[in-house]
Figure 1 (spheres, rainbow, N blue to C red):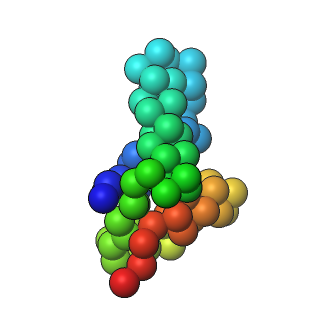
Figure 2: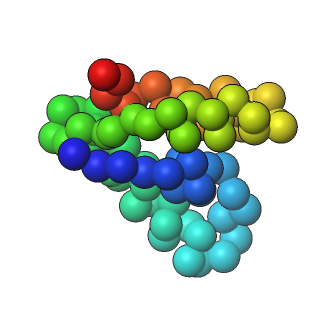
Amino acid sequence: MIYLDVCCLNRPFDDQTQERIRLESEAVLSILSGCEAGKWYLVASEAIDYEVSVTPDPERKEKVGAFADLAMKE
């Protein structure tokens, strides 16, 4: 099981001009891909649901919410 906080879920949508941010984004996307493939399970939390719900940018909110939707819900 893997837990990614909202900062991680947002990373692929940050400015990718800095190498560190680009590498972190690639890592997050790789983890999410593994979760989609059933290799790992992404764990959800109420904190993630809340933080995504208060994201001010509607486009980013939708994209990050799609990532969060990959998580296992109990």
